[in-house]
Amino acid sequence: MRVVIAEDVVLLREGLAGLLERFGHTVAAAVGDAPGLLAAVAEHRPDAVVTDVRMPPGFSDEGLRAALELRERDPGLAVLVLSQYVEQTYAAELLDSGAGAGVGYLLKDRVGDVREFVAALDRVAAGGTVVDPEVVRQLLRRRRDPLDRLTAREQEVLGLIAEGRTNASIAKELFVTEAAVAKHIANIFAKLDLPPAADGHRRVLAVLAYLRQG
Amino acid sequence: MLNRTALEALTRRPLPFLGSAWPWRCVAYLVASVVPGAAAGLVAAAVLLLPKPQGVLAGLALLAVIPLPLARFERWRLRLVDGVPLPPAPDRRRRELGLAVMTLLALWWIDLVMVAAVVAGPVLLMLTPVVQPTVAAEPGVAASVVGVLLLPVAAYTVTAWGGGRGAMARAVLAPQRSELSEVLRSRARLVDAFEVERHRIERDLHDGAQQRLVALSMTLGMARLDLPEDSEVSRLIGLAHDEAKQALAELRELIRGVHAPILTDRGLVAAVRDVAGRSPVPVDVALDVPVRLPAPVEVTAYYVVSEALANMAKHSGAARAAVSGRVERGTLVVEVRDDGRGGADPAGGTGLTGLADRLSVVEGRLSLSSPAGGPTLVRVEIPCA
View 1 (tube, rainbow over the protein chains, first blue to last red):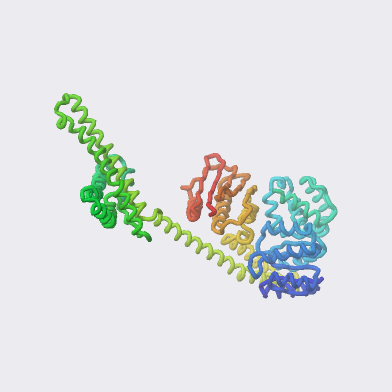
View 2 (cartoon, rainbow over the protein chains, first blue to last red):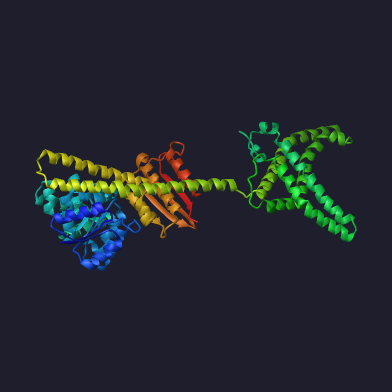
């Protein structure tokens, strides 16, 4: 997979590039600001973009704005946004772009969990949706009343669904069978009045759309 | 309590007030109006008594000469009813001239009529048997008694007019609220400086420590890839990795407490939504603020909402809360309500007092309704101009 990285801190930029190359990906370009990101994507046509939120020149949310602009031009471009903070506003804006397929919003901390991070990027590149567990946790907490009805295990499964995991991956994570996971998911959707859907990322969107309702 | 002006003295309890020098000082203050009265009389006499052209010329000359010393005199006698030094005014001359003209035209005779009516009235009543020997004994004594009873009333009236008259002179001589607005401005500067400093700390932590910790965590993660999973080194690296991640999480919360980046990036609505989203108690947000407001207004409103929500989560036992807000005629009105047990008391802690202090800097207002048993409503109004 060909990736463009946008991150203004050199240490992290080089680290991310080394990390992705080690897992067999090609880093087409690694840039340090938002205009550079737009130019690099136009030039290299990558499969996926990994970008920081806060970047020069203004050091506010240039990276995120650039990501949204890229998604608007090409809704199929996979974008993984790394943020220093969990901001629901940013997560919501990203998920609203290109119908939420092929996007991810992760806390920067997650790059430390190297394997999970690369797996998340792979899921995003494959058209999946990845939302940081912290965002999900906050949303769960905020809308806790209808979710009180979920068992602890079901909440756990819901969190993993929101991260864009497949049933197989959830089963592996929780040391249960895939059939058990499917049953949990059916229960969750029943309790939340959501019709079950076959597609992985649509599940995430359904859950998040429900959670986002004011 | 020390009374510095006649008006402040009026707020004392009756006996200490009546026993104080203030009524006498006010009488003296008002009686001193005979000086501008004499000046006015001098001008009138010049115009009326001298032959035509010379009289008018003399009157005009007097009018040109009198105001300056008269203003000095007004300034001087103001000390009788107002012990607070006058702050220097940038346009002092013009102000003094204004006061001199006011005094010359109207104030002096109002003062004298006032003091005559209020003081002379009771005194004449008291002296009824003396000044009107023809009156029968009983009504005469009754009138004297009424006169004595009216003296305290006269003291209040004369002090009120003297104090009011002094306040008027002060208002003309010194730009109103000049001291207060300077205090407010310096407080606002202090808060601004504080805010800039918080912003800088946030940036430094973000660009420095936080990024290094992320890089450290990434390096440790990569190192773990190369180690056999069951080795001692791998276990230790794993521990270090967990510590780094923990430090990152703590640092993130710390930075958010110092300054919310989203407030700068996306404004009040997004920042309030975000803080509401992190609240352990579900919070409904209905903020109708379509435009970006001035930074101090946004920062203050955000601060109030986050403090109110934190208090609510800590103390109220509420199951649900709501934040609503809108801009009404140039004033941002934000309300935070919950269904908790109420009983919030500004005297109880520094939280609410801190909010009120913070609001006073932007000339905002805080009102709190929190009866025991709830619900609690915190309402703030911040002018956006």
